[in-house]
Length: 118
Image (cartoon, rainbow, N blue to C red; front, side):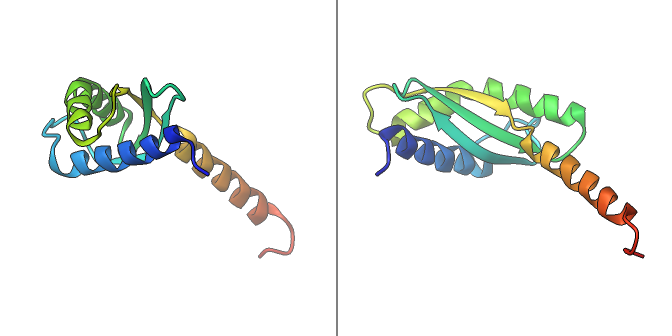
């Protein structure tokens, strides 16, 4: 059985993804992927995790663009969801993708360095 916060997190994920495709016109926002959403049990805060393909400058610009659109995202959530309280939105850069790629490259180096793999 799902907790209500998990259902709200799924709905927020869908809405934010849809807004990135259709609604957010900020030129600072680059190629963004929403990797996950966590909503607190009291439904007052939605942490939206994202990744960006690009340089560190593009990541910083995208974070600034997303943070400036927090009010718009919250307003759209209020229109779409029938909730007593609409959660605040916090955008957090998800470093787990880069971490996973780093581990994968280290494992490839280890496996190519073993004897008998020529």
